[in-house]
Amino acid sequence: MQTILTITGSDGSGGSGLQADIRCISELGGKVTSAITSITVQNTLGIQEFYDLPATTVRTQIEAILNDLQPQVVKIGLLRRIDVVQVVAELMRKYRPKYIVYAPVLHSTRGDLLVEPQVYHTIQELLIPLCTIVLEPSDLPTGIRQHGHANQLAAALAYYLSCGEAVNEAMLHARSYVSQKPKGYTENNSRSGELYNLFLDAIDRFCHHYSDVAFYAEQLGVSARYLGQVTRSIAHRSPKAMIDERITSEITTLLTSTNKPLKEIATLLGFSSQAHLSRYYKKQKGVAPSEVRK
Image (cartoon, rainbow, N blue to C red; front, side):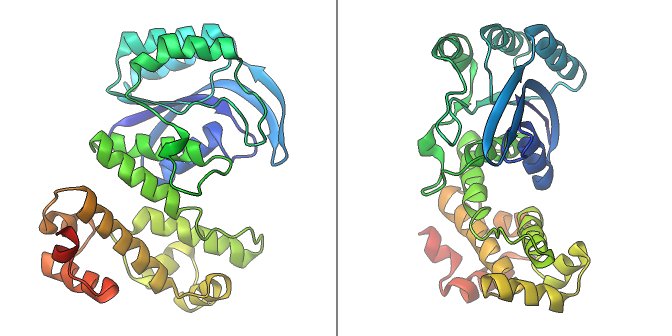
C-alpha cells in the first residue's frame, strides 16, 4: 500500500477538506499525509472566513512529505491562490507521483464562490494537464450531492489507487463506497445513534474479512444483542442483514465490473473457497454468481 498525500484546505466542521480526507482514508485502512492550503472559519452553517496560506508555506509542507515519504498518490482539493497553484503544479512536475487526483472545490454547498475565475484559469492551464483524474459532478452516484461527498469520493479513489487498483476499478470501488456510506446514516445524537454510525463505519472497514455480528459487536465494545437492538430501532433491520447486504454488494461489483475469477473474489472477500462464496451469494440473491457474470 502506497502513501497518499492530500493537498487541500482545512474544514473545521469536519465534513469536508483535510479532516474528512484523513478520516476517510484512515477508516479504509490507508496511509495518509497532508499539506494545508487554506484555513477556514466554518461550521455546519457555512464558511465565515478564509486564511489562505502563503505559497512558500504550502511549498515547504509538500516538499517535506515528498522528499521523505515519497507518496505516489496525491489528492488535491481547495486551491485559492494563483501562486499556490503554480507551486503545486511545479512540484507535481518535479516529483511525478504515479497518480494525481484533483477534486475541484469551486463553490460551497450553499453556492458561495470559493475560487476566483482567474485562479481556476491557472488551474486549468498548469495543473489539470498533470492530473490522472479530474472529478466531475457526474462522477458522483445518483442522488449524492451533499456537503463533503465529492471530497469523500476523491479520498476513497485515492485510497483504492494506493492499493494498486487500476483507475477504472478504483473508481468503481470509490463510487460504491460513497453510495453505501451516507445511505443509512442517522443524525440521532444519542448513544444509540453514535453506535449505529460507528457500526456502518466498521462494516465499511471490515466487510472484506468478517461477516459475523459478534466480531463487529466486539469492535464496538457492546454485546451482539445490544447492537441488534440499536440497528432494529434505527434501521428496522438486523446487524447480520446489514453486513450481508454490503458483502453481497461488493461481490456484485466485482462480478460485473472486473474479470477476476470467482476463486480470487472469494479470497479477496474472506471466503474459505469459491464454493463457499457461491452458496452464500445464491442464498442472499437467489441466483448463482456465474449467472450474474453472464
